Image (cartoon, rainbow, N blue to C red; front, side, top):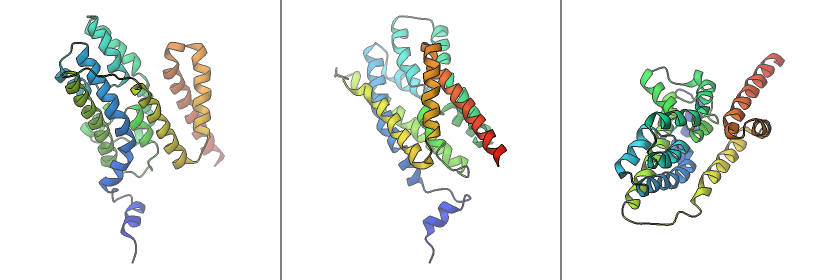
Length: 236
């Protein structure tokens, strides 16, 4: 009698069970919950209301830009300046969306939500999934990652409004999360080329524009990826 799980995995018309999506988002949850908690905690400690911290994670969902927003709000900077800084910090997501454009859902609402929630970690996971992955499963994965960040923000904001705790060591969580995602991509692809391309791109970008090295490195990596893909098709 054939194994039903193997039949589901080999048939793109049958989405993978929800437990597989939870397994994919588990490493992100271990990073997003504590990092979101640190953001919520710092936001409240800077004088903001806990509900505003949670709303920013719901409506902005920008990670590093949200951290950057805390001292800017505390200094009384205008919202236009904060919005411009957020745009610059998150400019790399434009490149993420372009590389996944053909795989995004056709429905406007689902397509818009997936584009909105396309964070670094979500993008890293989506690029490891097979091309036949249903768009609803991709959207569910993005929704769960968004939920982990909002959960962490709510916990940190509530704790920050009641107590003062030390946050020493929690800044390493993001680096550890990216290390886990890199290992998972290596295990799924078994190709060293993406790692070497990323390292070379950053090595070239940093001397040119240290303040914007990440955005420039991502652009160079995507250009290299498109060139390698075209070269592979031409060879075939």
